[in-house]
Image 1 (spheres, rainbow, N blue to C red):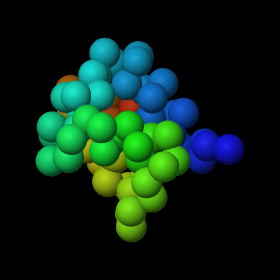
Image 2 (image 1 turned 30 degrees about the vertical axis):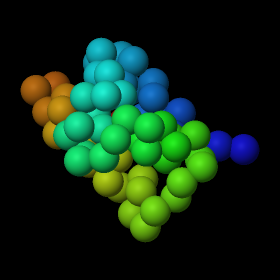
Image 3 (image 1 turned 90 degrees about the vertical axis):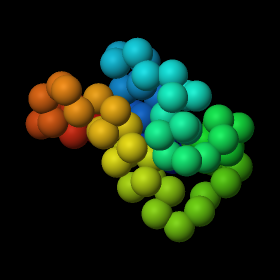
Image 4 (image 1 turned 135 degrees about the vertical axis):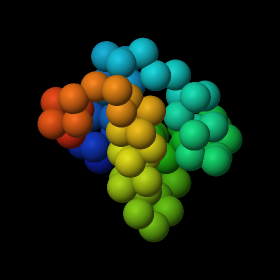
Length: 70
């Protein structure tokens, strides 16, 4: 079973139109590696925090209170 945070991240990406390739590039990883993290195949240390932080930075133009709702 997938961790809840991955669904929240994917949903937020969809809402804000953030592509996986863009998020992976911003994080400095490949899109394949990001996919593995979001699908629970890879769980590096601080994975959730790293992904959420990078996503927040990409959608930073939006209200941070609204975006932090995940």
